[in-house]
Image (cartoon, rainbow, N blue to C red; front, side, top):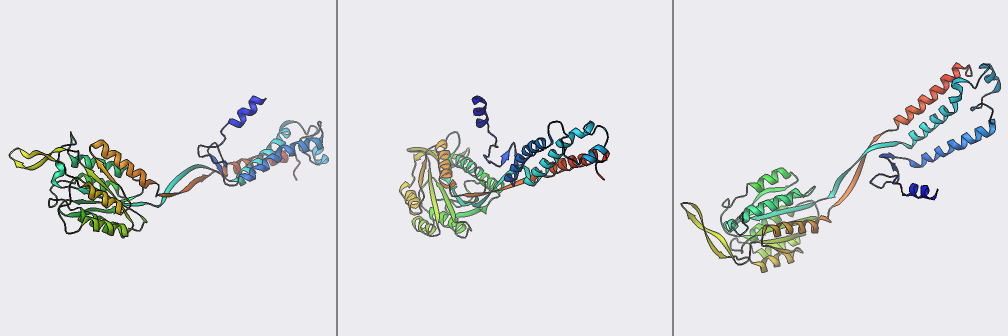
Length: 352
C-alpha cells in the first residue's frame, strides 16, 4: 500500500509546462469547480443509505413506481442513477471550462536594435583565414549572428574610406542576409574610416524606438580616412545610449595582403597585420561595450556568441496563450445523459 501511495505521489499529473490547472493536455479555466465532482460519491452514498439496499436506486414516489409496472427495477431503470450522475458530472466539467491545444506565442515587449558595421576595405581580402579570406569569413559569421535573432531589429552599414547604409533597421532577415551576401571589397572608396562608420550607424540607432541599442564594428585595420574622429563618434553614440562592441579581425604577425593587380588577378605580399587595438578598446570602453580580437574564423564565431549572450538578457518577453475551447463536449455528454434519463422515465410512465 505504501508503495502504491509513493507511486501515486511521484506521478506527473501536469503537462511539461508545470501548470497545476492542466491535466493530460487539457487546461481548466475554473479548476475549483471540479471539486463539485466530489459531491457525486456523497450523493450516491446518501441515496443508497436512504433507500436501503433492497430499494430502487433513484427515489421516486412509490405510487409512480407501482404504476410503471410490476417490476419497476427491471430493465433500463437500473441505469438511471448512472445517467443522472453522468449528466451532473458533464455539467460540472463544462462549467470548469476545459481548453486544449494551448500554444504559447512569445511576443517581445522590447527587442534590441543592432547596427552591424562591416569593414569592406581592400585589406579584408587578406588570406590569413585559410581557406577563405577575411571578408568571406566575416560575412559567414555575421550571417550566423543574424540567423540567431528572433525579434531584434538589425541594420547593416558597410564602410571602407566612406560609409554607406546597406539595410536600415529591420526584422526582415532574408533581405538582411541577401545584403550581407552582396558585400564586396571595392564597392566604396578604399581606406578605413572607423569614425564615419560609427557616426553612420549611430545615426540609424539614435531614433530607434527601443531603449536597447547596440553597435558592432568589425574592422581589420587602422583609422586612416574620414573627417570624423572615432573617439568623438563613440562619445556621441554613447550619449544616445548606444553600446559599441568592436572586433579586430586578423591574425598576428604577417598576412598575405593584396597590393595590386596583375594579369592573373590580385597580387599579394606578406605584410605586417596592423590593427589599432588601443583605439578599438577605447571606443568600446567609452560606450560601455567590449573589444574582441578575432585571430581566426573560430574565434570570430565565439565572439559573436559572446555578444549574443551579453545582450540576450535585455529582451523581455510576455507569453500569450491561445486555447481551443472544449466545454461543448462534456456539456453534450451531460445533455445526452439527461435526455436518456427522461426518455427511460417517460417510457415507464413515471413522467406526466
